Length: 635
Image 1: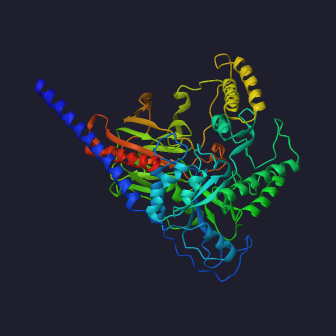
Image 2: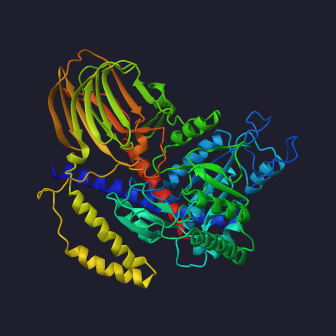
Image 3: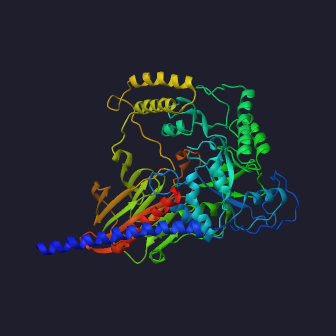
């Protein structure tokens, strides 16, 4: 017996030695590949030929009178990213590098080619014809690390992009934003050109969930308190400065002077540091149908934008631009942290009607399913079911009819939406038993009858505090942020005094009669829940994240039926968007689905997960990608 244990121990030791050695070799190879690429394979962007012109000689700068039916006017799409991060983490607020790479691959496969700012200017001013699937690619928010993470994909697909900058940050060598040195380095790289996000990123007229006036905040202050807000705030250039009663605290002349000062700063700094002002501008958080929330503010912005820049992206949410729009009222689609590849393609398809190369992924696995609505991607151990706009997605396992099952699956879709598992059902999902996560609720239903409902916030132990406690917590966080980050000595001192009073303040807890606090869901939230569903005869058991929440629930559906997955856009999604943008496409995500016989766990009806060497290979591939990403962003 001892020999057997020794042999088993030695075998495990050898396996881990192989894995460790392989990982070390991979890291070394990653370093060598990266260094060799820099030294010997410095590629250059090859511009797409766009020299043809339409018959009209000049469309001017305002083109609202030009029809979509204009011959050979295919327009262009604009896709933007707020940033890219190397790790693929669930709580990330921006797109991961892996997701970005997959999206660029799909756009390239769909036939999209990038155009430059000059192409856009020539299109609107001189009627220059653009390629059939022209795309302008933008990176907003001016984070320098983003450019290094995007570079490999730009080179691979011969894509050129615009990196936006904040003029105020160009001289800050300790900033995470693009500086003058970074900016000049990017201009030496043929895959990049520059644009502007404005002079600064600041917020005005900020109110919290309880209508408390937070005032006017800089970037760092906002980052520290945004979780206590809803949509009730403006960007610095969007409105008059207002007081706690929402009344103007500045005259029209003062407003004009304040806004003109920002544009003058942009002009002077770019002229000094760059030698010219970039053509492309993104007016932060406009999306109002004008150039600000107040008509007088909008008029000043419009005047200054047209004097300073060659083009302006004034809207977000739609990607398509053509000659019907003004060059100063363009729109872009921001790819979000929760967008899977087909999500982005579906949004573009909805805006343009273009043929899209929707991603299937693992074709062998995909062949095992009927996808009757939406599109599905199978990738390793994950199935992503994407709806069409304002619609549902459905997929049914082929040639498998089951009655009693023991199923485990992890769901990783956005809480705002519906992702569902259907048992003993039909291809139309009209019969059988439905287990769904919908808007942070676990719901079990059968036909039109709801059998069980659980609030997942309550399941997690909430509510954790009263609204009164949450309100006080936000006010404390606000004044701490002002003390730490504000540059106005009087405001800092005032915040210190308020902070001392707030920390002495006592408010009722839930136990003391306070109102329970339920956080607002947002379209950018991400979550992960593991279900185990045991269906035997007329009884159903269900475990959520390892905890049994349903025991012997009676069901009426009997006999064998299909196993299916579903996805659905939540029709009231508008109220769930912090950015006030409704997303009409939804991704349901099913990870490691396994179906076994409930009476014999060795009988596996279906599984899609990494096993054995496949799991080791997957882990090693992740290590190699992380190593490459590290050296790409740190050296």
